Length: 247
Ligand code: NAP
Image 1 (tube, rainbow, N blue to C red):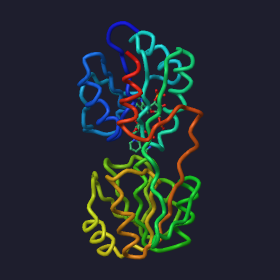
Image 2 (image 1 turned 60 degrees about the vertical axis):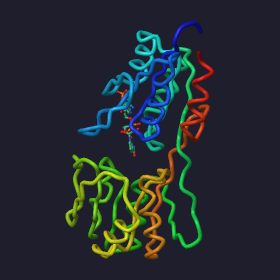
Image 3 (image 1 turned 45 degrees about the horizontal axis):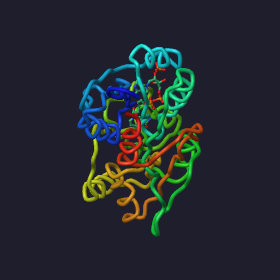
């Protein structure tokens, strides 16, 4: 490849943000980050940024060609599986190299009581069978799954959910990172007896897992969707090294 490499980062995560900052420092790389537009006031990464869906596989494949993209790094959230599958298909169609960067999942440690759930509906059923006061931290797009259950729900999201909420709920609009002390205080204050979370991995929201361990609260852990067969790394450093080989 001659000239600067044009890299599209599919973002919306701390990893994508950090990767854009690293790649923008390189004179031989041009970075375009893409955000879905779900969050009202997103942190904008370094370099050029576009916001909003592409219009499925076809829209993304067309954009890769029209913007002369040399490589795509899918740094979206581990649970954002539609965009990951679309990126896989679009990159194949446009013959553009693709790398997935996805933080490692959290691992169970001594003292944790985890109940694995295959998806959010499964998680809601398990949580309702375990307790009465349920702390839901699975994101604004997941809240409807809890609506059928007659329990007390403490629901924490960044932006207000658009979906129907359970009748008996308290909505907390908060963005991480969260501290261990703060999470323990919150769980005690609301007498939480079950925590529901996706296995997102990373440091920014791990404090709730440690707090649940300390308070001996069971955790319903939604497992990650199975990823397509894509070359993957689990760190920003490894993704940056991959991109170094492009130019
Ligand atoms: P998703 O279900 O995998 O994607 C749904 C659609 O949203 C995609 O088909 C695509 O629309 C658009 N989209 C998603 N990510 C995009 C991006 N980075 N740039 C442009 N379009 C994007 O995604 P999701 O679970 O709704 O997540 C949306 C965004 O929020 C992701 O970027 C993700 O990194 C971030 N996020 C997700 C979670 C989570 O738990 N799912 C948590 C934190 C952050 P078109 O088909 O029109 O192209």
